[in-house]
Amino acid sequence: MDFMARATAIVGGAMVALRRFGATGTQAVGNAPAIPEARKQGIMTLKMPTAKGWAPGQVPEAAPGLKVNAFAANLDHPRWIEVLPNGDVLVAEAKEQPGPPKTLLDRAAQATMRRAGAMGASANRITLWRDADGDGKAEQREVFLDGQKQPFGMALVEGTFYVGNTDGIDAFPYEEGATRLTGLGRRLVTFKPGGHWTRSLIVSPDKTRIYAGVGSLSNIGDHGMEAEEGRAAIWELDLRTGTARIFASGLRNPVGLAWEPTTQTLWTVVNERDGLGDETPPDYLTSVQDGGFYGWPYAYWGRIVDDRVEQDPGMVSRAITPDYALGGHTASLGLCWMPEGTLPGFPDGMVIGQHGSWNRSTLSGYKVIFVPFANGKPAGPPRDILWGFLSEDEKVSFGRPVGVAMGPDQASLLVADDVGDIIWRVTAA
Image 1 (tube, one colour):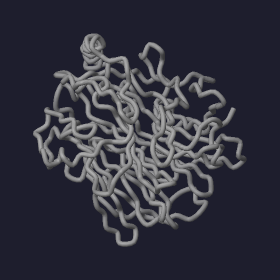
Image 2 (cartoon, helix red, strand yellow):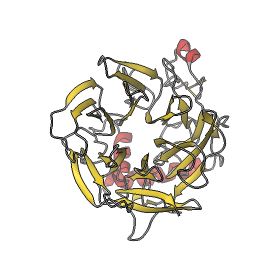
Image 3 (tube, helix red, strand yellow):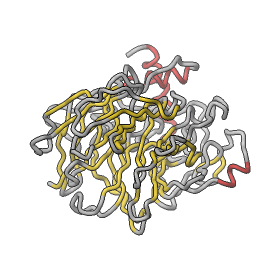
Image 4 (cartoon, helix red, strand yellow):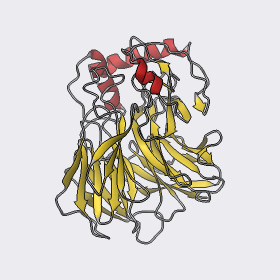
């Protein structure tokens, strides 16, 4: 451990101990969450477990009636999953790239992230995993596409494969059954890289548009709003015309995207701002309105003003209140729709991969949860699907769940674990 990592551990431990005394024991979860009053932090809480990985034979804990096995292993920071129509499973392997630290807090945060396995050299590739014999374990691995720039989101539409790199959306020719892309990619949309670097993709139900999640550069517009232009938003790309526009904005870091099938509505999970307390504000799951503004950076959970930000009352008055709170700093990243009957005992609803907190006195997330839906809306408290990614003393993480996807058989759930370097498969026991 280097000097900065030691200093971070000492200072961070002291701040965590102090803040535990005033922290609420109740998570801000659900349609009408109890959100504690903001407590501005001069020094932001830094608490993150050391990345350990899984011991041989060790697996996450699963809800009753479920079992879990490794579908694929020995990856390099697997983040996102795309299942192709022929059953091939694609995995984006990428990692946050450190920039030059500008402050002591930057240096401390980078030291913390490295220790947690969340920052460093990026594989910058997409691998293909094929389970030809259908036993729930992939026996074939191929490099599907490499030489990318922090690839994340993936989508396939009529012979064209789309990649959400951190600096834009690129398109490649694809032939069914191919295990490697050989053609040259062409840039369709350019995004500003850095900051919240992930670029998730999802295709519209009619396959005419692609939506992309683009996170903010900073926590609360720290470098000015000009630097945030085009960010903290969900973009829409029209595949017929090639034109792109901002579909919805004021979303600090919208990552997972999913369609609710009965209403054909787009939903996303959003990571909210830091530095106001353990549960303030909560990350959230929300439907996404065309032209909608969701508050960032001026306000959170609708119109609760963040007075650390130079205000714009007109923007605050437009802010839409999200649909469903997921608890403070859970780092809810993965999102997919899971129909009733996929896993025993689970109705229709959304599956969410919670990567886990690094900025609260008692850690949150580090599990895969399920939010039941009825009539196109969340309907009830969340349920745990997988947990056990974090040690009981919160000192080490065996894994951290990120992307989630329905398995090729439509009777299983796949989960990317970027600390365990595994794709987990969840099925009926």
